[in-house]
View 1 (tube, rainbow, N blue to C red):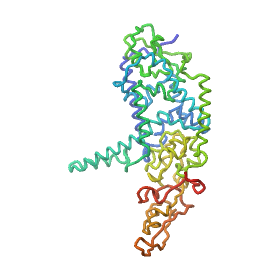
View 2 (spheres, helix red, strand yellow; view 1 turned 120 degrees about the vertical axis):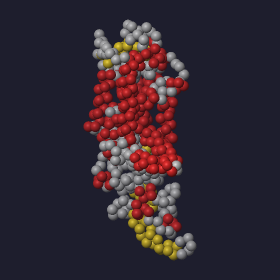
View 3 (cartoon, rainbow, N blue to C red; view 1 turned 90 degrees about the vertical axis):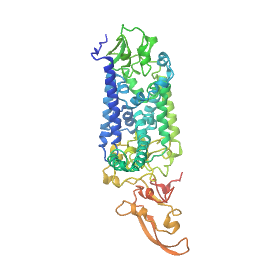
View 4 (cartoon, helix red, strand yellow; view 1 turned 180 degrees about the horizontal axis):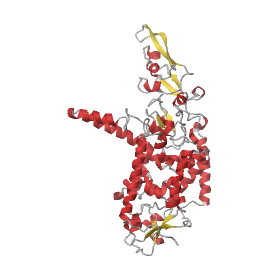
Length: 522
């Protein structure tokens, strides 16, 4: 007989308040980790803690990379919580779930029957996606981790929210600074905010609309059903839901139920089914306690169960697993038959040590390295790494450069896809090679002096040298200019020369991936 765990000495409202305090506190901690994950912020092992609590990311990394990292064991905390209290992570801790609660769009949502939602086969979608992700990881592909909820939230903060906030603050500061009696206060505020919270210089990312649209789509799905993402699509929720089937503490309805339907209407995941005596699926229940809060008869117990919950029709079957395996094998074969799988893109410049470390089979697409890069040189790949490398980190030197005095990207990576190299070793990593376009370079093409690339080169022995040459200028006069050239044996591909090149548009000196001279320009 199930023993009732909680005598509910607190009122239902008190338990709801406690849950919300924990929810918002964890969201605040997640955002704090994000803010101080930049270079000079908190240690990498601290700021990537939330990602290491995430069992789906850690498990798939282990399967794909064939390695186990000691730090990944932290995910066992979440597994243990789930084995005790079901999907409590989703209802009490998940930052994405908290955001969806804050932007529930309840006011604009059309009413629907709870029973219809509870029976919906759409719930099987998250389990299908989960199986495909796990099978693909077994085939060393982590592409579909772009759907990991914590990664989606972190990337959105990195690429859309924080740069947008920085631009908004800069605009307001610029307007207020024009008011004489406010200029001193604005300067003081800016001195505090930068670089401790906001970047010292504006940062720019590619395809910001793409990432914003994905996050906005997840939020707007709340118009269809509350927490639509959590109910039907979230692969992490699917993994925790399967574990929740054997969770020790589960909800049950006692004999005091008056069948008022209040709990079914309040359930944010729509798992309370009036046609089954208002029972709920423990794999779908997030232990949010809203049913207990609204119940007029105290008809809900959260008690210990020693047997596994009943398997639901939308939970994965053997046939569905075989179908998912076939789809995965075919999908991985297709993406690996792409031209990008045969030849590296010439602009596939990966963070220091990542290429040699097998980035594609290790990267969980969390975006931590993107946020940590102080120059915004690290960007999410779209076409450079093919479909399999979608949203893995690449260096885009025209937007930023790999700082010679920085190794932050390796320090924050929760799975060491970008290895945590000591600074001296990181400086020796060759991520690319610089090439000069003599048809665009000012000294070569126009016969005018420009020594920016040579001045900026951080290599002590200088990978760019200037050689005097006599040329005929635009006026027809013979003049002597200093023409730059690259000593390839010294170049590490940091990209500062490309970033600082004064030409508008494409730089006259560009960094290409190692081996470009043997690669077709795609």
